[in-house]
Image (tube, rainbow, N blue to C red):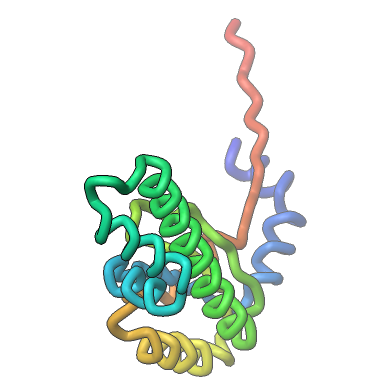
Length: 168
């Protein structure tokens, strides 16, 4: 009886959600990086970082706490910028084949991206190819954990308000 009442009350909302998600699939993409490999790349690209590191290494006795802290901040900022650039590039390329995307919380130091993509069933192959193409391009720097197809969990939100029965 409660189930029938629930379905009557939520029929329009449920029908609307099901209609919007018809022929759509969700794919998950987690991207981890090889921090050491990326750090080596950053060192090659960043003149100031190389100079400061060489200065500290050549004057280990006289290098200051400030110089070491400055190097640490510079490295962390460069890593954050590189992670942001990778993520932006991946999102930009995958948006061509996706209807929508959702960014989820990253877990740990190695993960730079944890996302869900909503893809039309008709574009599934195009999306798959794009993910594999990007994965090959970043081989050795980034590793991809690509999952799906899934029902579009991350793209459906249904809020229910439950009423408590008054005890007699």
